[in-house]
Image (tube, one colour):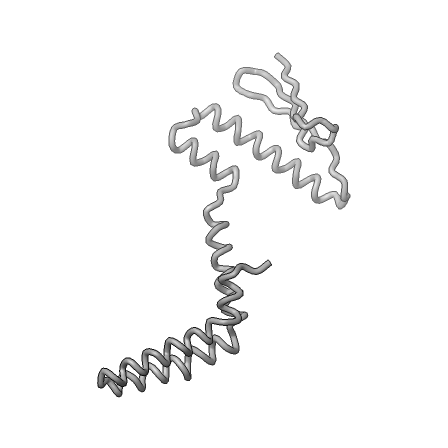
Length: 155
């Protein structure tokens, strides 16, 4: 569904520019600025109006795609967030390394799952070691029917 602004730019902005151009030409003519009135007519009626009339759909689509690009630029992926938290001092070096290894292992498991060509996700478990000597097994697929991910911690 198109936004109201996108639809306005695509279908009706050319008409608004034409009406505003007429008003500005009239005001400039009444005020005695004939040269300015001619420049407004050329820019408004002979440049902007035809551009918006014939290419309004493309302009609206370009404006919408720029807005979507700007929105996604503000989003951060998990690795950038982890680096930011480490740099700001929220995470210790050991905790950063532990989370980084888990993140990379999960990413590798996801890539292996996606590259095997099957449409179903197979449950994968990743075993990670941490600095205290504990091993954790995490079910990454979460396909066992439970909403909570299966976690086992061996001490």
